[in-house]
Amino acid sequence: MTGSSPQLEPAVDLRALADWMDREGLPGGPITGVERLAGGTQNILIRFTRGGRCYVFRRGPEHLRPRSNDVIAREALVLAALEGTDVPHPRLIAACTDESVLGGAVFYLMEPVEGFNATVAMPALHASDAGIRHAMGLSAAEALARLGAVDHVAVGLDDFGRPEGFLERQVGRWMSELDSYSRYDGYPGPDMPGLDRVAEWLDANRPSSFAPGIMHGDYHLANLMYEYDGPAVAAIVDWEMSTIGDPLLDLGWLVAMWPAPDGEGVAAPSAVAALGGLCSGQELVARYAELTSRDLSAIDWYTALACFKCGIVLEGSNARACAGKATREVGDLLHAITLGLFARARTIIGG
Image 1 (cartoon, helix red, strand yellow):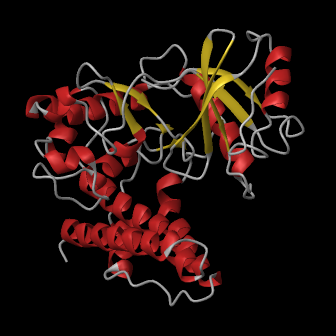
Image 2: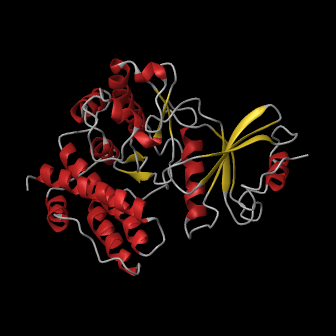
Image 3: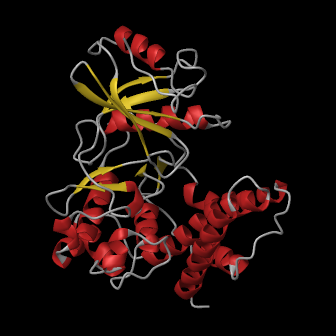
């Protein structure tokens, strides 16, 4: 008999899931060892075992948002496309885009990643060796360079995004997103010093061309799993912002969110940052440069754009907190990160 858990119902009907797995030809038997996994979003992650095989299940939040199913379906597409590449990623097992199977939710199954999230906790090996921590950053740059080298057309993602005009759209797209937060009752509007100046600088200094490729869209430490026996990245996770665009924005994002070697930085406090010993942002760029033919001469522009875009994304949680749709603690933390990101952008543009 398939097991169930009051914490999972009604978000995950395990019996319906088992029936679908049977139709997919996956190993049968009871679903056991069900464990809810923590994640960086409200998406539901569950680890379980069936028929001697371990799985991780992923779907949107219990209360689906308008684009939740599209996001999950896109994640499954990009994971399938990465099969056979040297990009470290969770291996997709099967995906279901039929919303009738599981109460309206699109979902997929992937193989568990044997690794740890360095923002949450550090194994003794990594915690005790500054050399390993330094190499973890270089490994993050290496994994990203591998992603940027994938031919998105060859792996079937030629219509996964709209690379034409990608850079030209960025400032207007995210200023419009910021404007949309006015819909939240109680939100007084953005308090982001330098917002207009950064936006103007980005438009005035935009690179004239780029080579399109797969973008993760939210590439930073919290979305990386590391191997237990060394500094290598075991998997890049949480692909919900992935698209076809300019992969150098991912590099700018990594640099913008990277903790300084002394553990300071604009991101939320994390286990690895607290220990220090990490490489510098300049070293991240240098390692990426060794593995790519892309022109990195405008990396400061990409880093400033990452600060701008990420800051606006995070400000959305502050706006929701003002309206009582997120906790005030979360809103304050993310607004503080936004202020740090815009301070960093102002430093880059020289004002």
